[in-house]
Image (cartoon, rainbow, N blue to C red; front, side, top):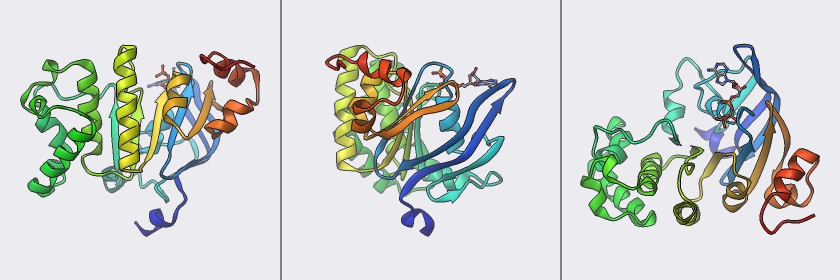
Length: 252
Ligand SMILES: Nc1ncnc2c1ncn2[C@@H]1O[C@H](COP(=O)(O)OP(=O)(O)OP(=O)(O)O)[C@@H](O)[C@H]1O
């Protein structure tokens, strides 16, 4: 625990390669992701974004190299203590359909035997931050709009006040107006509770709107990484340049 307090990085990849079947999904990754900032992992489909995020939480183990999350090498025999410190909202792990929204959001707290009163106060604070009306709590997930479901998913990811938040395409599949609204809520949440966040996205605009730090991936390799302004201001190659110039309002 102490090591994480002292570490300046949320996650470190030290010469990490990952083979998945016949594919080298990640190729010699050397990367340090900053603490208490939002990092966007940006890249096209198949570039290795989801593999990277699964390595962070120990769902995948590197073929070579080492991943250090929250200041410590991952203990693959016992990943539970690390995972308790991490919140995740991943598109595939949506709200559980057989639980009402309240039970969905409170589930991590219940599984961790947290005090019920404290968890309920935390729930109320998160609802306010995410501008979700209390009435949604007694509904089933399918009775919420897509945007409300995403926000409830974020509340669930945040209920234990994690040190690290992993978001894998959490806002995809939403219409533009809903997306913009959720981006605003997300930024407010970050302001109210600074937290290390890793956001996987294939959308350069989303990366720039939400992140402080960007990692651009292509075919399992990092093309460029750095603070948003540094990457937008000086793309290191044509691939990154094309992503940036495709943004509205950016011309070279
Ligand atoms: N279970 C698997 N078995 C074999 N290969 C896999 C598996 N999952 C992913 N891959 C391969 O690993 C590479 C990286 O996949 P990954 O899912 O990390 O990319 P991604 O950038 O997240 O893509 P997307 O945006 O489509 O989710 C791809 O070539 C993919 O085909």
